[in-house]
Amino acid sequence: MRTEIIERAMPWIAVVLLFVVWEIACTVFAVPEFILPKPSQVARVLVTSAGPIWFHARETLITTLIGFGVSIGVGVLLGVAVGSSRLAYRSFYPMLVGFNSVPKVAIVPVLVVWFGIGFLPAVITAFLMSFFPIAVNVATGLATVEPELEDVLRSLGAKKRDFILKVGLPRAMPYFFASLKVAVTLAFVGSVISESIASEKGIGTMMVQASADFRIPLVFAGLLVTAAMGIGMYAIFAAIERRMTGWATRRMDLEGMD
Amino acid sequence: MQASETLVDMRGVRLAFGRRNVTVAVENLDLAVRKDEFVAVVGPSGCGKSTLMKLMTGLVMPNAGTIAVNGQTVTGPLSFVGMAFQNPTLLPWRRTLANVMLPLEIVEPHRRRFRRERAAYAEQARALLKTVGLGGFADKYPWQLSGGMQQRASLCRALIHGPSLLMLDEPFGALDAFTREELWDVLQAIRARRAFTTVLVTHDLREAVYLADTVHVMSARPGRIIASYTVPFRRPRTLKSTFEPAFADLVQRIRDDIHTEREADAVAVGDDEGAA
Image (cartoon, rainbow over all chains, first blue to last red; front, side, top):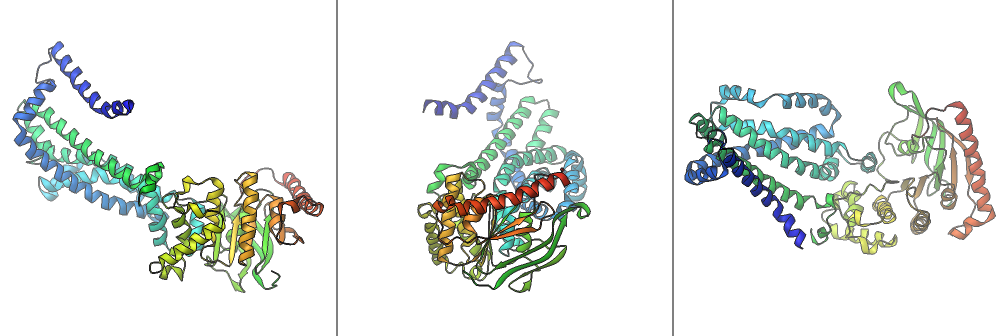
């Protein structure tokens, strides 16, 4: 019981410890505010500029979630196609890998040419950053079905659709949810990159402007808010994962579930 | 039991695979299985026993020769087959009952009725689970069952849609000796209740003689049938009968056949051991 409480408190303790060490280090070494602001200075800015920060953070959150939503849809479809058909695997997989290797920073200016600045390029960058791990994981789940099980289903006259719905997709679920946790944080990276290059709203824009004005504490406030949103989303998807794929971790409390 | 109608008729079958078909799995294979007969196929490891099963059920097509089931040449996967393997291959996200009912969701005519008559089918599945001693485990997940229990459930899944041909690929191979012998009797009891043709691939010779009406011995690769034995013992057979001289004698004769084969194989090829 005691160890459980300590275990639950550990993430918070670790974060607090990081801030304490940071604060002390800045004070002891007399680091100027425009190089590395103290956590207390950042905290003050978080309060005094709460309005603008909230305005930009909301923009980034919405952009990210829309891009992420699209990447779930596209990622699952691509994953199913690539994971269930050799031909699709052969044709698309190398292209996917190549596409994923392209630095997304380099694509943003092109997106701006096509779609103007602001909302749309950010959504698209978030999508581009995050669909790949989803597609790869879903494909892996589908492609690693035991050959004997395939024989059982084929000998029952199962169609491709049966195979995907009854075995492939359920089997891919643990892979899928694991990928969501990675993908949602990547989506934040994508939207912030795009905002910092070409937008009038969003945390990325705010941080670029703040650093141009030498308001370094505000830059760090933006970083912290982005990190917090990432952790929040991660936690939400981790909770969904536990709920949906308990069978994969053999949880005993599943017995009462349906 | 002695209906002489032929269900499976394989003649001069050859199958090769690998790059440019260099590996010949079976060649000149002739095998006939009567309706409702229990056939066991034994042979040295890597002799193509599992390939034989896939050929018989239409999962792979032969390069040469003909395979006819029910008098019709096989051109694709047969739909009246149940299959069980050494690995139980249950779906870990489904409870035992739902695992057993999987074939009913796929195979016609059950597929069409499944939604409407789900309760009736569930009842049927529960009854079947009871006959293999899993009455109280229908609502457990596969990982909550022991290896022997999983294999029983796998057997139920193979039988739920009432197949007229049951294919067993070393289904008891990974179990301990006691559990294995228990499952022999489970299988024997199921067959006593309802007649269906069974083909069992195994390398346990006692198992083959205990369960089968006919034991076919396969040669080393490329596999073909080199000897066939009719098992004369009356049913139901009991574990006691496995200690009778006539039983031990038959097992020994089959063992000699395989031994000769393995030695011939060791002289002929030494490089492709192991692959089942």
